[in-house]
Length: 222
Image (cartoon, rainbow, N blue to C red; front, top):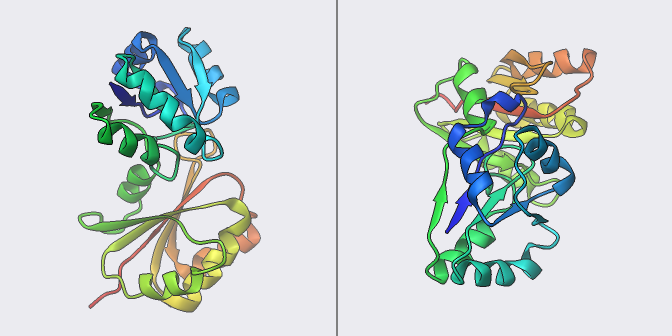
């Protein structure tokens, strides 16, 4: 059995009782960055063996991990924060485990996109999650496609690219398109900007972006 276990994106109290129990019970924990995860495990007094499993080594390690699983071991996969597989490592291991008949379970738990969407004030009954936009190649094409989407769109952005992205939203979506920019969800300096794309650009030009961001964009009105 492999468990995909969401970990807090900020406040450690957001972890579930079931997640803590399973992290103590499994034979092995795979972590995106062991230096980050060890702090969480120590906080909850979890002494399970820990190994790294990230985008740079997952192709090399996945076969060994699947063999452990086929031999009856239980493994938990965690990322630095949030739910594994959502803009984080996880898909490759899940796919290979399922091919080999290994059972996979994902626990419900923290992920940045849902709180940002729900508190944005933008319709959340139908939405599209875009993850991170392409850094260069294909970025303009993606934005042109997104500008025509009628559903609400949610995506992640880093602080050093936020201004560029807001400029592009004004260009491709229009200055008046409603957006919400949610920063540092569940952390000490959590904040939410709500307004038009142009207002968002003006705001963050004056307030230099710091932290991790989720952007919610209103869909094109028919």
